[in-house]
Image (cartoon, rainbow, N blue to C red; front, side, top):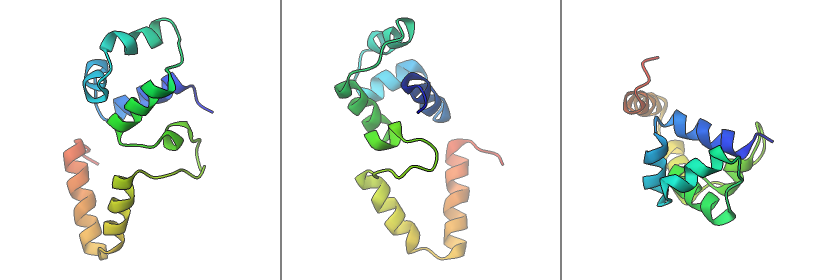
Length: 106
């Protein structure tokens, strides 16, 4: 399993968030998040739940390794249900929109 702090950094950077933005979105003090890294501490379960809520992922997704089964959040389940109802062209349009929103120029 990947180090939990490294995983949080990876998720934060993938969204282009600063440590401060993560603090705001998770309703945790930035000093708390900074101290995890300075002191190499493992966040409490309550803090991890807030971090997961900010990222809109489940705890199982936070801890899952590559290829492991995970539990989806309600919004992720809804997204997949709606995705399944789209035809090929609609899916391509949604992907293009998502790339634009994420700033991905590929």
